[in-house]
Length: 537
Image 1: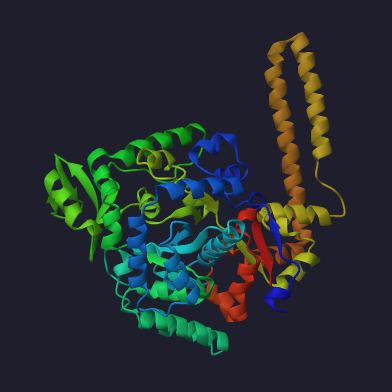
Image 2: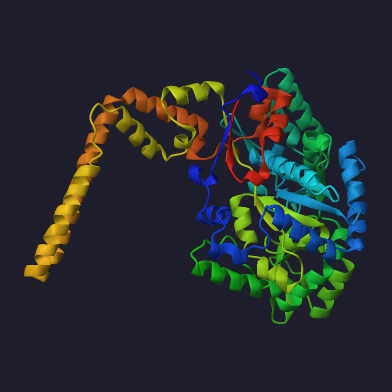
């Protein structure tokens, strides 16, 4: 059966998976306590408002520079007609972007790399159908200035890590691809010689062996996989684009505006009990050269570059910004602002952790008078084979039950299969009623006994729970075959009790399903449905 023939695939609420934070669940439910931390919501009204706001604020100069840079970045690539058209459209006042971003992970890294980009492509197409007088371009923002090499230098294939070792420093987009031929040799041995394996080998070779820089290699891969859908890939590590950002660089160096506003927002988030993802620094910029990306700090009336001898007076650093804006690299706090300054962007698509830190930034955007984009939780997917789906049916495990914690799933299924019930909820209810009566008696005779009654109730309830656990363990032993089958199956589908999209690489699925895999995902994923997709293949 081909991917597209399956009728078992389904959507379920993100909340039912147990893998999404309380903040993201509250966002999806439009919880009132969260509304002040985001701007327009990802629905028809929200996009109407965002279009009007961005149209009024995005300059013609920025469009001209953006198109010029993109054309140059694509000059060595084979550009599809769809992508070429999208780049040209960006010069028009009625063209807007839908953006997602990702690190330059080796061979795309985690599987959700695909889901992010497909979400952006599908949303752009959906908005084009809804607003025919406007144009919408899907953009993949490469995190070329990131310097966390250990986060990107590997991918997982069939449970094994394929890793690239290098001692290069600085922004990873500028890294030489030297040494990746050895990685290819090891990886190719695992792939075999099928037609799909040949495609993966050629993709890896063309990207990493025939391109000198990691940014160019990553662009090639994204372009090969998604160019037919008009995806535009941008590398923002560019002098002309940084020139557009100079006023915001200077403002942060002078006034620590990002630090002030994000710090205040963090306090407000903590009051309503949300976890803080990132903490701002007084200056949220790095100093970037080919072999260096280090924090800029202000000490003793001098701007210093951490772990170097470089330092600047106020006058000197202003001159440095003016002459060499490309040397100033925004950190996680300022990167979103940089994106919204240089792109006519309406919406940022990201994972739960990404959107959580974006929500720390809204008042900062307001302070520097840049429209805050719509935030959209990317599509998430769980791929289940027909064989695995058949096993779930035989074990009477529903799709939603699959995402239960393993011990909870085992307890539920063992209890359902047991010949006698040992739920004890009825017995617990009887106990609670009896102790409620005892408390009434104690309060009417000697109130000092209420504490003793409460302690005895706690002891009895605990004893009942311990008895339930012992009976459950005994029943698990009795049903050891079922327990083993459930455990093995869930471990196959959810590696390390985590979503596979965070652990596995697309090559595993391309190897099996080939060129149908991405078009099937594109056909099925609905970004504005705001639900988790289970693809039975």
